[in-house]
Image (cartoon, rainbow, N blue to C red; front, side):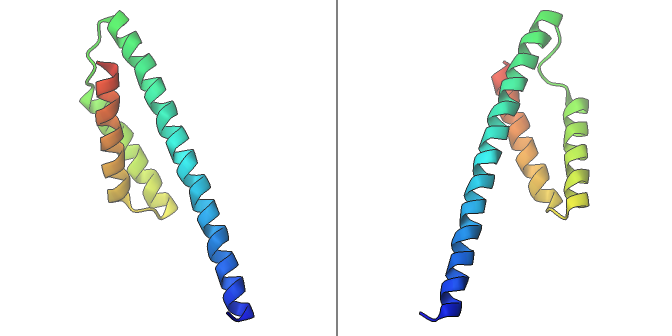
Length: 94
């Protein structure tokens, strides 16, 4: 292994550590979002509101997709992930 290989390997390892940290943040944020969804579900039940709110869900996804475009992230990936999270949040609220 040459010195440049070692530096490249260290950089790779450092980037992998950062990805691991980001992955943990994503997990933490999903857990937080689902907790908030459960709390919203309880309030909806008290208020006699339906779990599904298609207009609100679509607005949440539109806002996230716009944010993805602004940050240079794949909007279709963000759309797909958000719909999965929203689908799960509906089940949490029921």
